[in-house]
Amino acid sequence: MIFIALKAKIRPEKRDEWLAGIKQYTADVNAEPGCISFEYFESTEHPNQFAIIESFVDSDAGSAHVGMDHVKKFFEWMPYMVAERPKIIYQELEGWNDMAEVTPAE
Image (cartoon, rainbow, N blue to C red; front, side, top):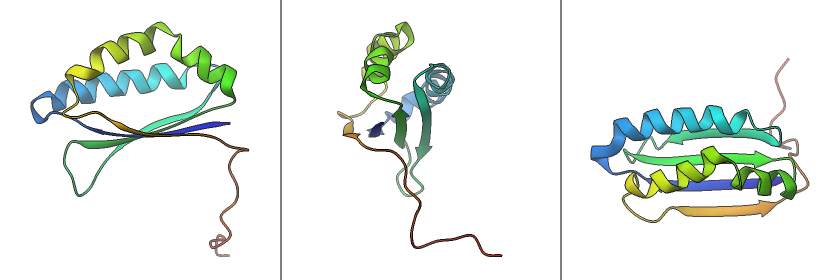
């Protein structure tokens, strides 16, 4: 599994455009056959700072993702949305594990 976490600070004047664009992009990426999950979240402490969490079944799915037309268009569009260069964590992992510290109460 490929796991990616991205942190992006969006230009305040581009907020509405960003929200519309990331919503569509999220739907497009989640429709890809190799996508496990693509979600975005806004920081509760820093307005216009977003985290994007995405995962793909394997490196082949990740490579296919980068080659998609909607991804190419997004990466051409995104520089006009961000206030600074995004930060990224990219890891190849075995997959999700159960959290040891929390079990549902009965």
